[in-house]
Image (cartoon, rainbow, N blue to C red; front, side, top):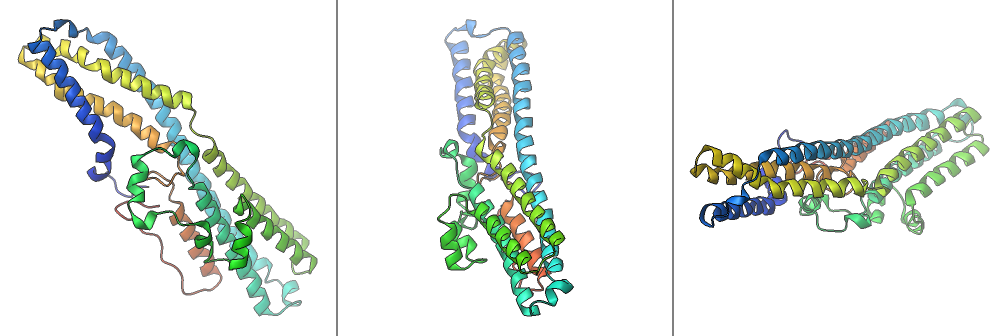
Length: 337
């Protein structure tokens, strides 16, 4: 996610330089044929081309709105995970610090159980984050949006076992890695421990039900993320948006040529800059939709899950009374991950 008001040229350049060179060469070639080759038939009425451009603008706008909806839904989901995580923290600390618990086991054991439940939750959101950033089959091709992130060492994806080592023991991590979906297993372990605490009379029935309800909420939010992750933006919309955009770009210079000729002979050469600008605008609108439709792909337009997970970790460990807290994730080259 970009943290600045303006996207720097160093980020835009990898996306546009090939297309801009193509637009310049294509329009220059058409002007040369018209001026020196006598191909006056290349100038065609602008009205039908303008009609195509209007239709393409509406279609690309629909695609971009749909892409933004996917991105914004993903951010809302992680906002819900943040709120639910804080609720989980205060519930664990208060429900396991009741008079019933204090009369059963020493306070040091209570603190150990609280820490275990909260640290396992931190491992859970970390596992969800790492799993979501694994590239699906349709994202294995070259993409400049990924290249910008991958060239920054701090943003490179770490293995799940390394990420979890901050919260879990080696034996727990080895057991988790045997499963296809470690995040769901972590929630299962949370539920099993809550059941055991209830059987040991360390949790009242009401508190047990309330904590289990929170686990269901985490499953719901995880499932919502996985829905976006596993179901790509419908190809029929994405593909034909690309086709229509480039169809318009290819026919546009012929219509501009006829308009420039009406002014004077030398105005023909103004077709080149005006065509390049218009074609760049439409191509950029298409690229914006493409780079926004998958918000969990470890690219520059990702939801900043690493920063969100770190904020949750700081809040929950602070609730535990810890003083050596990690620092908040900062943007690097104006990108927050």
